[in-house]
Length: 302
Image 1 (tube, rainbow, N blue to C red):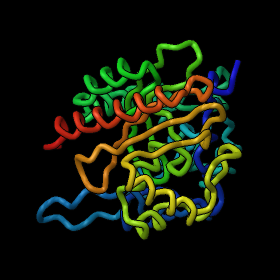
Image 2: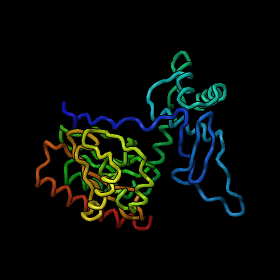
Image 3: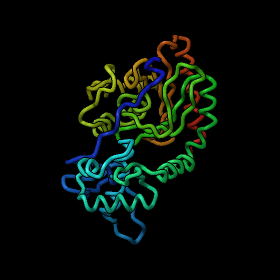
Image 4: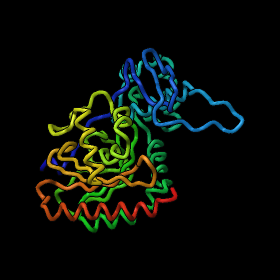
């Protein structure tokens, strides 16, 4: 089995721990536990007319922090391990865990001493996909792109320093990459991420990127300024390329969907390098441009 067949994950997102910084909303800073600080990230909802802006609620922040920790660390974990990672008061963490167990958001093993994500999280995650207008509108274009290329197709959304798969279409070939909705990958090592970053200014990109770019493979761009230089080429040619930067043996081509500026969604086509000929590459690029144009029309008012 080749690397492209398994196409393993790029590694878990940054873990929570002492000195943790996590997202709670733009401009917000909350202490979630000793040494744990939650700072602004993806954005906050505007205050309702006539009501003052509300600061983040500590218990809500801790709940989200805990669920995101489980999402980043599949499997079951002891109370001591979770407490060590999150630096939350042990008694408060225990009460929060038991509450979430009773509500179905967290599950335990037979002993009741090890905890993991519950099925309710899957239901809520699925409802996000089911209710997203862009995902619904993109289905015919993704199907057409899959037919035109016969390769693996992804629709993904920018989330901080990552991209998250919202929809996929599997390759028609036996040799194909692993794919699933909800998979999170680094923005700097993917064609999807680079296509989205290229819709931002260089200064915005520098502000968005983490200080240290992790090497997912030996081909990953880990120099921030080199990545900024590549984004200039992406803007010029209209598409981004991942040259085995996220998965060895796999090349990906991606284009942003410009229904808003800067773009938040992108479409990609992934193909094992063993199957990528010059003619096939030209076909993929042309099909991606056509898919982008179709999606631009159907998402124009979103």
